[in-house]
Length: 233
Length: 233
DNA sequence: GCGCTGCATTGATCTCGATCAAGGAAATGG
DNA sequence: CCATTTCCTTGATCGAGATCAATGCAGCGC
Image 1: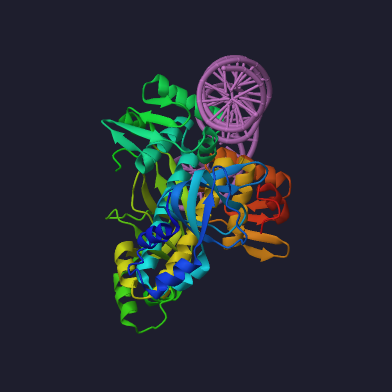
Image 2 (image 1 turned 60 degrees about the horizontal axis):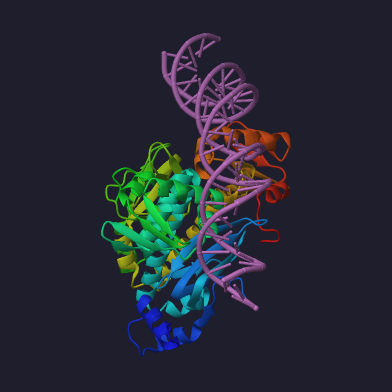
């Protein structure tokens, strides 16, 4: 568990706030509102403005609420990630904890105003946004043009890259999200996700244990199933 | 048709390069490679790095090429827009002209390096990226959770906002993209798009003339069909 | 004008994944 | 340790949209 001072320290490092004692760092740290969420808890945003989030510890999902009970998970985030909660437009957005987590919240407009004097911070943010944009565009391809089995392969490979630990030729994944979360992230239903897991299990491509542990035995098979452009990185 | 000097001038204005004679502006304008594309032509990117595009004139589509002949249109852009072409990752991206168009191309990394000394430019870019991210997230919701008729309504409303001209209570749209482009943008087939247009036409919600002209007669009906969060802006 | 080509519309059928329904396994609380 | 609840898995059926196929219509060169 991170202490509060730790929290600010890792954040400062993440956005390249170099000098520990600079007045800018002082002001920005005062701006950040720390929050502690328990599993399943949603971040209640009192204002509708865009927020900048630094996730110190744990994992979260960023959810867009469309009409009725139809939610779409836009992205998952893990410890160390910095990301934006967009201002609500045609949908409303919320951040929801997957297990215990710890984060820092900044109103985006004020943060940007403060950061104007430090191009390093702005560059860092641009990099993070470019990353979010890339992921979102890949998600759009998956949601628009991929079959269920391709989407599952894309999901597992993406998670392997972000939170997997290699063990020999296999990759061990301890997924913090439920089948429902996976389904809502991939534009599928929980039943379809479950069936695809069963197919991969039967094919010995993956192995599962309990609800959260997944071992990827055949990553190259998953890559072949992901429907990526042949020969791409 | 924009002249070349015009092109740079509108770009400079768009990224908030205030002083006309500043050395920074000089250097950035030297970096920009102007390009002229005829209808249907694709921008061939000789390097795989991310590019910054300023579209002076005309409209373009940003296409992600997935496996086989499955393309997903990530976004449409119109005159005056500034946007990123991501570096190719699991997919390759290309920009394709819808009709004649004129644009400026910048290698993103060099541009950012140059812009580091001017926080105004960086702030402007962050704003544009936040916009692209918002649109991409809305697209993800549409692709993941919406029916064909909702997607068409979302598409028409989005186009109305960006390139529509009001005429009384109606909105006139001169769509630069084909039915195939609409389908590839919405994760549907051209037949489904056509059928949805027919349904809207029969309901007198829209009126079409030729291949590109669409008149939205009942915008509130479209909003009701778009599956937006009730009461959202 | 006429034929050609590419795009749009309409109809018939099929399929993948959603939906409906029932068990089964794992975490949670007494 | 058992009861309760929640989540996951599996099966049966259904339907929205894809696919296959044919026709209509606009633009273009001759």
